[in-house]
Image 1 (cartoon, one colour):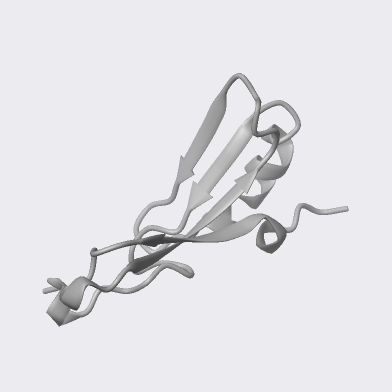
Image 2: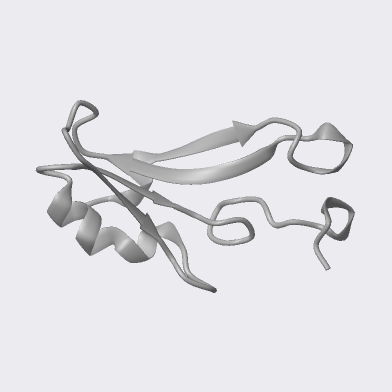
Length: 87
């Protein structure tokens, strides 16, 4: 069975990050044991998304807590607007 990124996806709401005090909604994949001694965080490059790490998340989740996030404007995370400071 393949690792399903969407089964481990959460949305974090970060308050007061956008214009008018609106929250920024950030998509994060969090899998593996929460009480694992070590955590591995995967951060994609420009134009990427958390799902690109699917194979690594599947492999390492057995021994580590693994986290992959969609950076701002990528994947399922909010895209900044001009009002939010995007230029």
